[in-house]
Length: 78
Image 1 (tube, rainbow, N blue to C red):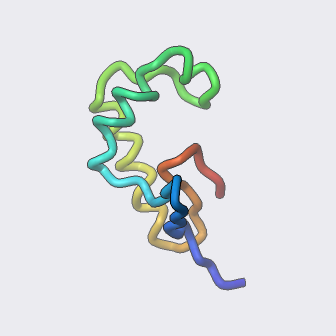
Image 2: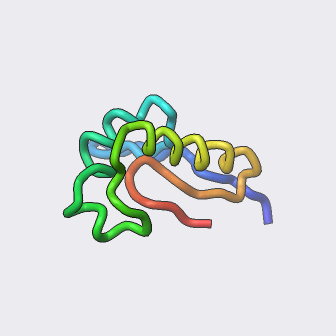
């Protein structure tokens, strides 16, 4: 099986793409710091944007082998 990895998908109303380090501020402001959202995640609420940056720094290299699926819309799949 050929690995395609996380590919950009775009419709008129939605764009799914790979996470970037530049997403950290928005992620922190919109969901990683929100206790109501974090209760549905596998990690605790982030205490600072630095925690979110660290998470992204862990996720992003996974895109290189093509078998890692994680996009800026929701969660991750391996």
